[in-house]
Amino acid sequence: MGVFPDFDGLGGIGGLRAVVGALLTFVLIVAVLMLIVSAIVWAIATAHGNYATASKGRIGVLVAVGAAGLAGGGVAWMNWLLNLGQQL
Image (cartoon, rainbow, N blue to C red; front, side, top):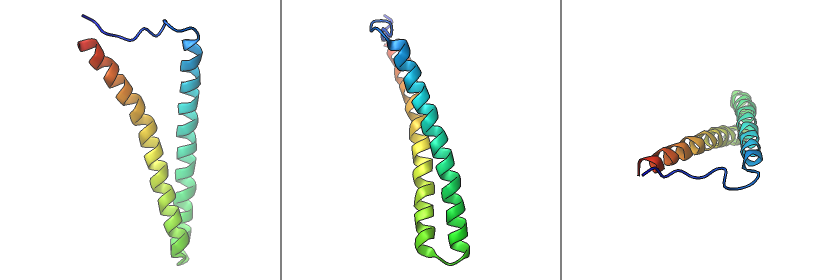
């Protein structure tokens, strides 16, 4: 018995997939840019001895890596769930 969601059951699902794909691309681009800027701020602040700003740069790097990981991991998790549903 193959269990798989009926993606054609709703009208406009193709447009929704396009919007979600565009949003995922936007999130990944912003995360990479945030990672670059935060790493530069962290490095410059540490070199100049401004530890409060260095701490904010480090937090920015961690948030950017977390956002990119969640965005990419969400797609992988959904694909795993869809594959698991086919095996039921």
